[in-house]
Amino acid sequence: MGWGLPTEFILEMYAVKAFSLPVFTGYVSRGIFLNMLRWVNPKLSEEYHKPNIMKPYSVTPLYFKRERLGKENKCLLNPNYPCLMRIRLLRDQDTGYLLDYFRKKNTVTVYGETLQISSIGVQTKDYEELEKESKPVKKFRLYFKTPTYLASLGLGYYELFPDPIKVFPNLMRLWDQCTSTKKFGKQGLQEYKGWLLKNMGVTEYQLKTRMVQMGRKKAVGFVGWVTYETKTIDEWNTTTIMLAKYAEYSNIGGNRTGGFGVTKILMKNQ
Image (cartoon, rainbow, N blue to C red):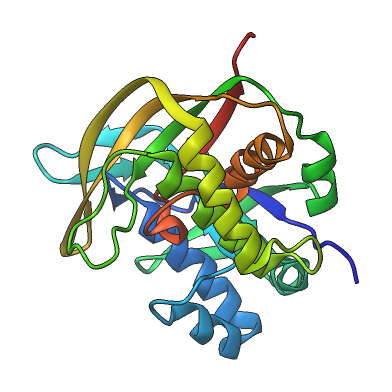
């Protein structure tokens, strides 16, 4: 069996006419993707709607030239400027459904309005390549580009600080779910947690919290950057870099399928 092939689709779209969108559009992007999927595979789209299951995709919010509409929590999407969106599929078996949609349709619908797809970019990097290109480093920085929050089981609230023990084990679980080989398993996960607690910490950070409106709901997350440093240059160090790169496809934390937890890794000079 193969390793699987995470794939990112970059859509450039133009509105047929001007219309308003919420300031935060991550959940709008998720709706666009699930509607695409429903058009070609209704059963899978319904499966990805279910709560409390780990889903093998992520999206970014819509990126467009923003024109705020007075004091409303809305922005105007101008048809003269492009609107960009990224869809990341973490299993290659799902990629064919999206390609099938693009072969048949060149539009998407948002709040009853039409967006024309003018171009589609595709980037892929298989799991084996992610592993092979990852090299151990003493420290690295993660940028949290959209609001991010982390689950805190049994405590009734969310974590708003990217402690390594909260970030990387969840990425490992997602990796194990989506790749067909190179699985860490429960034993590997426990060993990795022990390594994180002994060998990795935060040495610098610049974070702030941000509240966003998602329809009738509100959510709070942190944005900014964090520098992680490790004591050892070893296999688990390499694994951590691999998972941080993987997060650029998967997003991090809660609501990562709704545009939360978009990240970027930057290697620090040694």
